[in-house]
Length: 161
Image (spheres, rainbow, N blue to C red):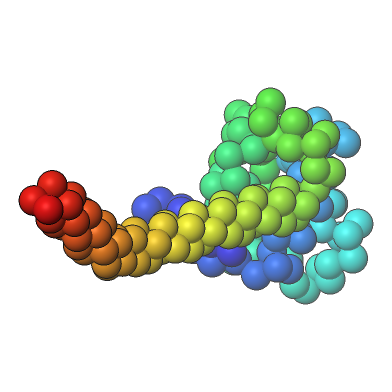
């Protein structure tokens, strides 16, 4: 998974997505996220694993998701806290988690890709069909013209007799 953060594409592991999912669930249940440690510790993350790099990564992923908005309240060593915006609440209601949302988006992307592939195959088949039609129509045209000439000759010869 990747997200644009400050014009740079930053990649996240599934563990990061799961942790952000915990934060989304916490915001959904409690309204605001003012402390990262509480929901992360409740989710079973060791306190040793919670460092500034992880917090910055989760912070940037929350911002990049588009489902959380910054509040003016301080959050640990960061300038502000987060709360779910309307899209975030809808996402949680519809999908139940950020991970499910990402899976559904990936599934939709795959379906769109499959539809485009089918459309491309149909166009290829249509082109081949038209090429075959162009190649074979001349054969029938030659038979039709030669039949017409033979018929015309027989008609003229029958009138001359």
